[in-house]
Image (cartoon, rainbow, N blue to C red; front, side, top):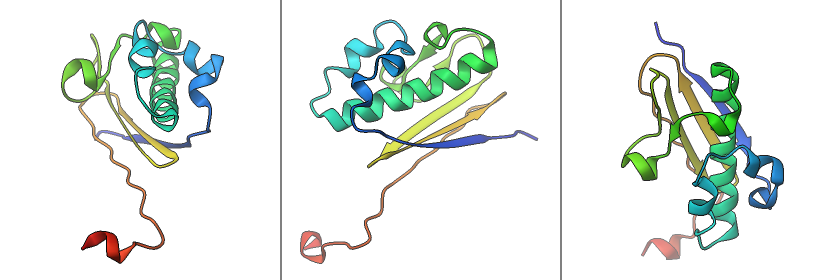
Length: 124
């Protein structure tokens, strides 16, 4: 039986300016993220990747920035941890990030913010 570990984290405004979080990123990730147009998008991207790298680094016994993680933008699909069977997936919506990990197979996670009120006029 495969065990799936799911973590949730709140995205803090300004996360993309946090030296600790940015320091967890791998080579080239920050350059990709800083091209995102909105600060909130950069904050979500940094939070998701730092969260994944911190947990993967703990599991693999390496510094988070050295985890051989290929992000979805690189793979054209789900994130991949090279040379392992670890499954990793992240999703973000509004101020939340979800991270799912398995030891031995692909995994997927999705999170979606549902507002308390839906503006009915916007649906017409």
